[in-house]
Length: 311
Ligand code: ACO
Image (cartoon, rainbow, N blue to C red; front, top):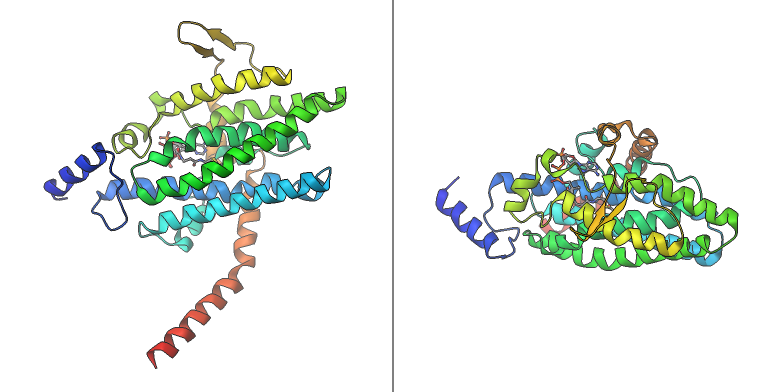
C-alpha cells in the first residue's frame, strides 16, 4: 500500500473526518468494517427471533402492536446495515452465505430462549439498553455510511429500551407472581447482557486497531462499566435485585464493582453452543431457502429490463 495514501488516510481519521465509500482506505480497514458491520446486521436480523416468538402471545392488543413495531424496526436496522456493508464491496448474498456457513458471527445474546412474557420487558430494558450503549458512540465511527445508519437505529433503540422498561415497571408493580416473573427474567438476562459488550479489553484482539482507526470509539470494558452504572439504579427503582452478590458501589471510581463474568460460557456461545443456537440458525436457513423464489424473480425482472433498455 502506498505510504503517502496511508498517511493521508490516517490524518483524515485523526481529524475526525468521515471516510466515504469511494475514498481510498487500507484493505485491513475495509475488512474490519465488513466484519463488524455484517455481524452487526446479522445480529439485528437474528435478534428478531426471540421476540418474534411472543408476538402471537402478547397479553393485549396494545402490547402486540408495540412488539410487532419493535420487531419490524429490527428488520429495518438489519437492512440499513447490510446496505452500509455493501458500499464496501461485499454483497448481501456473500454476507448471508457467511452467516449460514458459520463463518460470520452474530451477537451471543440471541442464543438464549425467551421463556415468559417478562422476557420481552427484560430484553427491551437490558438487551436494547446494552445495544444503545454500544451504538451511540458508533454514530461517530469513522466510516460515514455506518455512522449515518446508527443515527436512526439509535433513535429507534431508545424507544425499544423504554418500552421494555415500561413492561418491567408494570410487572414489578403487579401481583407477587408478576413481580417474581420480572425478577426471574432479570436473573436470566443480566449476565448474558454484560457479555454482549465482548471479551475483556486485555483479551480483545480487535480493539486496539479499531480504536486507532476510530471504528470503535470506546473499549468493551468501558462500555460494559457504563451500562452497569446506569442500569443498577434502574433495577433498584423497580424493586428488583441484580443477580450479583459482588455488586458494590465504589466511591473512588464513582462506579460499581461487579462480579466475575463467566467467560467460558461466553466463548461457548460464540462457538455456536448457545442454548438455542441450532434453532436460530435453522430459522435463518429456512427463511433464506423460502425467499429463493423472490431473489430469482427479482433477477429475472432485472434481466428483462436490461434487455429492453439494450434493445
Ligand atoms: N457475540 C458474538 N461475538 C462476539 C461478541 C458477542 N457478544 N463480542 C465479541 N465477539 C467476537 C468478535 O466479533 C470477535 O470475533 P471476529 O474477529 O471473528 O469478528 C471476537 O469475539 C473478539 O472480540 P473483539 O476483538 O472485542 O471484537 P470487536 O472489536 O469487533 O468488538 C463488538 C466486538 C463490541 C461486538 C463490536 O464488534 C461492535 O461494537 N459491533 C457493533 C455492535 C453490534 O454488533 N451489536 C450487536 C448486538 S446489538 C443488536 O443487534 C440489538
